[in-house]
Length: 335
Image (cartoon, rainbow, N blue to C red; front, side, top):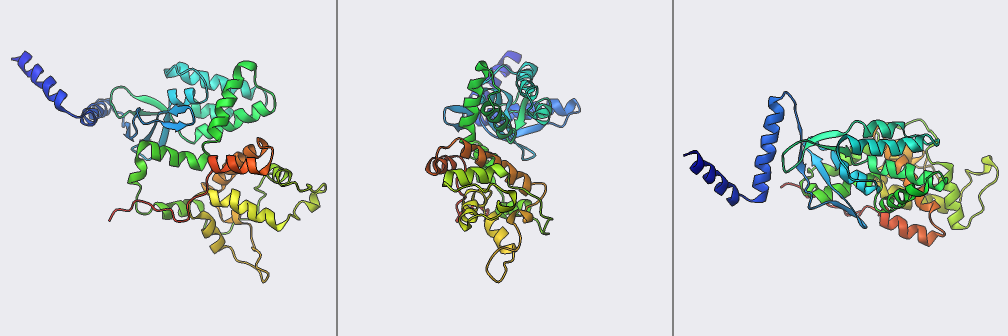
């Protein structure tokens, strides 16, 4: 009788769609974890057959039940050109690589701490837990690797990692990585009706902040170089920039930061009698999201500037890696 029942169960399983089988397997894994007293995170979106693709690089990615976008551990390792071995050995390999850069004077302590504390979740196909990392760690790793390479601090066997990281930096920035993961996993079709409002709430502060120098000097040095302008020798003259510099900053920075943010910043920033902004736009960015994203975006922009021989080359790279947000961007609203 038991044999007949088992055969019937297998027959029913064969009739199930792959998606249904995955759902059943995932529920089984959740039940096992819950019985063990663990509240598991579940990958609600994502499929190993639909990885995040940037040029020749493919990275498995997921959106978890708490909304976090994560990259698989193996995907992260392979994405930057390291061996894809999993488990603790894989995490150690990434941490050891970052530690080698830290020993050469680069600040990698925070990255190593993040690598040593992966996000554990149940993958869509169920089974054992998987380790992953929040997607925003990848641009951070790429940035420090490219800086190390530019400083001539990588060994010959590490140079391929820098090449991988350059490809990745040309494919996304910290804002763009979220959109890319959403597209790869299909989560973009499920974003809520208040998606744009939430972006503005996260990025734009209600109160004006005290002015703090935010744009790195390298940004203006590279901007002047690529435009063929003489860079002021004296610090007191460096704030006397051509009007064109402000127009360019709107184009290469604020238009690409997040949808609707530039228009909202301009709306909230008063102008004087000559039409000039009374405050810097970045003084309206939030401390927890807006300002960090601006700094990360600027780091990517400066990296692309340094890698470019002229303005046209820079703009081609910028438009490919950090495209402008469509002013008519539409979200799929529930009706």
